[in-house]
Figure 1 (tube, rainbow, N blue to C red):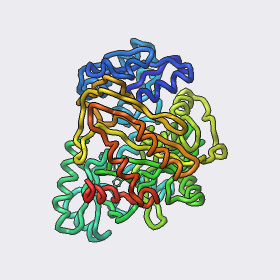
Figure 2: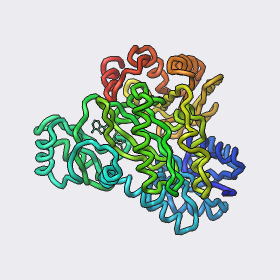
Figure 3: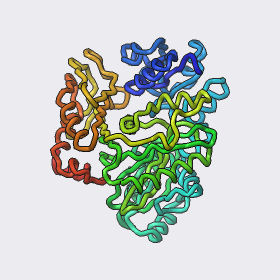
Figure 4: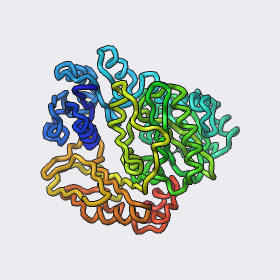
Length: 447
Ligand code: ADP
């Protein structure tokens, strides 16, 4: 087993990894920018090293500085968390060249799944159902218009290298195609340095259902059911739950097995998420994330496993601690993402936390790097905490969420907490009756 792991991240996810290391008796090294000298992950880790100025490009994405930090501290492995370098195949390759273990999949798997066209091709080949659409990249407007005629409007144009909801444009008609096609390309170029796009049928009322998979890299893989992440604003998730209110045991077993077999086939190692749109009882693959996801705690909640611990174990060449038959769903879990943002526009709201109090009690988990007097820097993501609850069933989890939100105090900055209060008063939310457009529609009329 590793003696020491470096965490190439910040915020709540850095804490999450440090906690797993500590329980396993492994030393932890935090890295931080000059803007994060007082951050909680720096305080909590066994050691900390400054890797550059505030801008992410110069710090949390600074590969040379991170590799140097490993060499100086003697860390043998790096956990990337999510975001930043977690899905950067070149980074994984460089670590390999330096004899440092990357806690995550191989560079090749990251590369294949990071390109949405090769990802789709691979999944199709592995027997995973996909959204109908263009056959690979769409080179010009002519071809785009042809694809539109073939599959029928509305369609969605997506940047091959896209992520985080960027580089996606919907076209409802041939007239809208010209603009949508150009915008998706230029967003792809501007955000991901790649203007290749592809086209998919735009599904009207799907739910976003994602399957958690986990492999040992030696041909064994399991699935840990689904998460329903349909409540989204601008394609960004805000509320996630497991199990999905619309998925029954038989459906879960069927799609879960397809996913587990697919990743077993390619000797996938570690945690991964296969994302689908789900409409009229059919699953349509949209992308695979080759990392731990923000919303992984809801899966941990219902299965009682520690996914980060498993990631570390398999990265060190050990076996997973569970097989498919050991994984039994227990109750219901919900996560809400608490962002430092001002409603109704969700404008980032960094600043000083004058008072922080985390909720507690049975079935409540608060993953956050906040503390009294902490100043949220303006340079990074606005996610400042995840409140995760667990109950024996969905109504109990909802009641617990409401109760825990009431205990939470975050003073000094605006947060998305009022949104969740409002959502908990909606019958559709209480009934689990929502699709990927529900929240956008609701926001238009309610905020
Ligand atoms: P990203 O990598 O930016 O997260 P995804 O491909 O995962 O992009 O899609 C993110 C979200 O965009 C989905 O959860 C869904 O809400 C919406 N979306 C993506 N593809 C489609 C589609 N074919 N039809 C309708 N909505 C879609």
